[in-house]
Image (cartoon, rainbow, N blue to C red):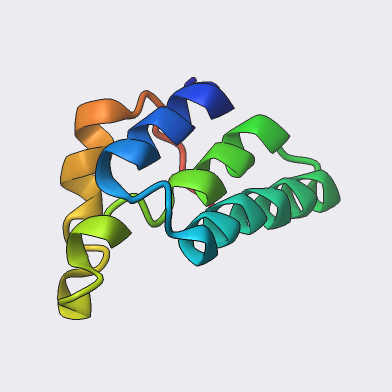
Length: 88
């Protein structure tokens, strides 16, 4: 499992550290997912990291949003070491 610090470094590779609204979104998504995990009795770190990196491709596709989410798997599988369980 990657740490929050590692996830942030990966996000920085694909997203501008100067785009405050994007970074607020990344961090708030992590917080929301941690809260949901706590509510459902799940692993807060795992859910939190998924929330943090769920838009990892945003900096690559924000000018062509039709690709949003399409490029995420390529970036994620290259850089992230998250267990391959599924949140439903």
